[in-house]
Each structure stands twice: as structure tokens, then as C-alpha cells.
Image 1 (spheres, helix red, strand yellow):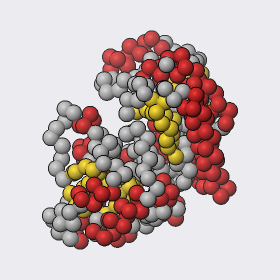
Image 2: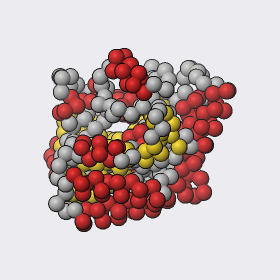
Image 3: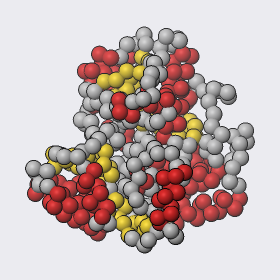
Image 4: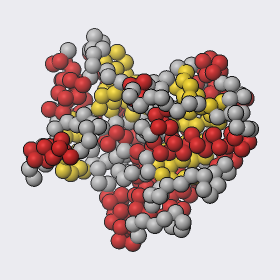
Length: 401
């Protein structure tokens, strides 16, 4: 495999939408990946929270192989057993009664925006269509989801955004209460943890207050669990940490165990706003990706949710190791925050050089919000993997500080 030629062709033929590292990844197993020139890396990016079971988990691979031999794709004009099975599992383990399948988190959030507006129009009237989201949020790159994203840097060059969206500070119930206008507001859209925004975790009572406020004003509560769902935080869905239930929830990333799938979940009452012709997705819920998602969910839930409990334990261990590094380097590290195996380390400096230095040492990690190292290992990660990864991080921080 000619690495130089691949890199040259990448520059020549692919649109320049990513700042890619000069690595050509060839294979992955568990929490490790190998390049075309046989370099090995510990992967604490995990496809950005996608590979919840690690790379090439045998259950997911087997499910894809079997389904590919049987039926890869049919239109949603027909029924397939595996799509219905996936929907049933999601309903049985969440607040929801109905599911719509699509291909990504951005598409799921587009569907949520449409569903909230249509529901409000059907139940209340046409003038109630505005959605309140949070500053520093991230909901996707399509025009609807981008318009709902509270970060100007992602919107730059694409203005004007779609109307009907406003923003309040995250974890500020007073600001949200002031922003809601029952005559105009149809929904509130929030992430349980602002992952892309720097791993911002709300105060313990925030979502209970949001739920009560939405109930009192007749406004829908929509949760974007694209990154926090699928066991990532130590619960199958992060809303369970806060003792509330949303009206609408979106999923993607980890749902397919590595293949592209998104899902929009809702209560039966809200879901009734969608009828044939109001929303659709050609590839949504196709048999191949549904088979992978079923295998992923079943693996997460088997043995009384052992995998999710393992995520809790490893999350505690990861958090403890990160805090130990912080205690030794208070002049470098501002804060450690997160839930489960979604953890962030806020630095007093830009973290891009840290990411590069760690990569040179055999560790893949991610930088978000310019100065936050985001740790997203697979839920199958072990203490030895965490130790190996954080030894590299600690050494790099010490050398570069």
C-alpha cells in the first residue's frame, strides 16, 4: 500500500472539508488501530463516539455479514423484520413509543425540528414554531440543524440561517424561563452534555427544572443524544441520569456500532404529527444498518447491561486518572469534567499541539472547543488501556508545559 500516493490522491480528489492528520488507517481491533505502514495507535477518539464496542466487534461484524447475504436494502414502502426489531428494542428501553430511522445525527435533528413544528401547528396553531437551543451547542451541519447550533464559527459563510431559532446560556434556567414565549415557542432543544462544546455538564437539577418549565408552558423538550446515547455516559441514554423523560430524542453515532444510522424517538402523542408524506428517508433504517444496530444494542444490554456497568466503572477510573494528572499540573489543567466514558480535560492553552504530540507517541485523542481534550474510548476499554493512554498524555503535557 503506497501511503504517499493515497495522501496525494486524497488531496487531489476529496473536497477540503477536514483537517486530516497524515495517517492512513488500515485496520482496527478493539481500542487499537493500525496504519497502512503498520504503526499501532490506542484509539481514544472512537470515530467521535461512534465505535462504542470498539473496532470490528465480532457481534457487529457477524450481524453485517449475515444480513449482507440475505438483504442489503429495500425501500420503506415495505416492512423488514430487522427494522421493526430495532425499533422495538429502542422503545422497550426508553421513554418513547415510536421511532423514525434516518442516516445521521444531523438528519435525526432535522426530523426532530420538523416533528416539533408540525406537532405544535397541529395542536396549537401556525404561530407557534420557534425553537430555543443553547449557546455553545452543536446539532449538525444541515441547514436546519446548523441553524439550531449555538456556535457562530460553524455558521460562518452560510448566513442567513433559517429563522425561528433563539439561544440561551446552557445550564441557566432563569434565561430559559425568560426566553420561552408560550405564544411562539414550540420546543426546547438541548444536549444532556455539550460534548462538541467542550464537555460541559449541567448542574444536577437543571434538567428537572427544564422539564417542569416545559410542562408548565406546553413546550416540547427535545434532547440531542447523538453523542451521549448508547451507554456512553454510564446509562443507555443520558437523560436517565437526571430523572426526567423528554418528548423527543435523537440518536446516531454509537447506535450502529460503526455503520451510519440515526434515529428520532418520540412519545406516541407527539409522533402522531407525522403521517405518510410528511417525512421520509430513502436509506433510513435499511436492513444492513439495522442489523448492525440490533447487534450493538443487544451486546450493550446482554447480561443485565454488563457493558454499560463496565462503562461506569471505566469512566470512574478514567476520571480518577485524569484528576490525578490535574493535581500534579494545576498550572496546565483548568478542569476535568464529563460522565462515563465521555470526559474532557480543559487546558490553559490550545490543545492542538497536544493532540499532535500524543499521536506521535501512539495515542489518538481529540481536541474540541480549542482547549479541551476530549476522551471517547470504546465502552470495552480496560484499565490497562486507560493507563497506557494517560501515561502518554501526562508525559506530553509535562514536556510541552
